[in-house]
Amino acid sequence: MFFEAVIGSLYDSHVTVTGNAYAVRMKSLPPKDPVTALTFSRLRALNAVTETGSFSAAARRLGVSQATVSQQVRDLERALGIELFRRSANDMLPTSLCQQLYETARQIEDGTGRIAEILRQHRTMKHGELRVGLGQPLPGMALIRAFRARFPGVDVKIEMGSWGRIVDAVGEGRVDVGVLPEPPDQDRFRRRQIQSQSVVAIVHPGHPLAGRTAIGCADLMSERLIFRTAGSSTQKVVDEGFRRAGLAPRPSIVMDTRDGVLDAVSHDLGVGFMWSKGASRQAELAQVPCREMSRERADHVFALRTTSNPLGNAFFALEPEREESSYKGGSSV
Image (cartoon, rainbow, N blue to C red; front, side, top):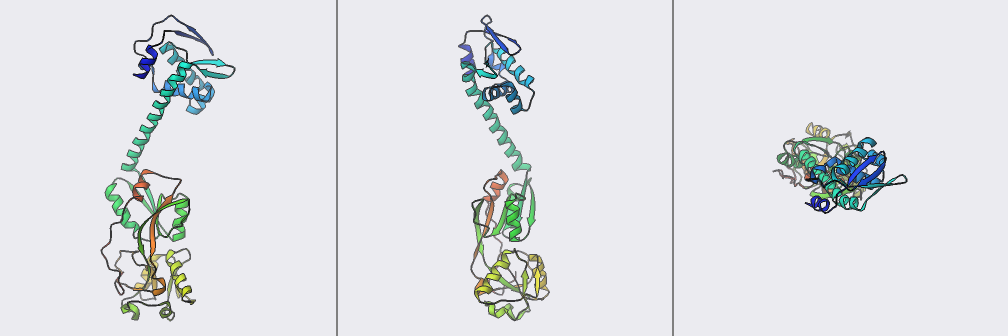
């Protein structure tokens, strides 16, 4: 082994330590098995003193007392019969042999750190927690179902809200990943497209518009309209569609949730709007495409670039399981 080869090639010495003074006497034989002296705590102390230049600074880095660090170094010198450091003013200078040992000691400490990270990730993937932000049930719920099939022991916490609320949740780190239509294309986010969909009008099956294959915004001006509050991705598309048509509608009802809109429409309180693939709940409502809102928008899973965890990365790579449903004009939601 490396240490046996290095230390075995040395003539022997014995270290006598008094306070901070080091005196070396060449009299003892090399230890029979020097590797047994190379405990991990001693190697960490050797690395810390080499890198910081003093016992006190090394102790602060390691979170132990200065006496502990100095004792570990002295024990290592005594066990190996060598001198590792020489004092110069207020600094501890590594000997040439210490510098040779340090190169491999640093690799050992780094390697144990990597092992600890592998084990941490393994535990996280089996029993961790994933926080997901959704602007609407689909395709996020389909992704979560696929994720739970692969990682059944992981707890999933879901925050649902408007487009703006979920963007804030991802940006502020309240959730690990978000699923939204067209999240901000900003350097702080990494994004991956998973599907495309458009906004459609939804009406009660008994409504006169329920049998139409397509409508325009002008057809809706005489209707009781149910809008979402500001910050909703659905409402942004609706507002854009009416602006494109040169119209300024007044809603009869404004709801702060998608479910509220579905409930209002199911009670025939007016015409609402939703994403064509945004829900799997069969509410017996009819979807009617609107020409000014027909452009498909891309749904993305997105997260902060500066934060990454194994579970978030696994969710990021998933493909949603497709729902069996129809999205043609006049179909049920």
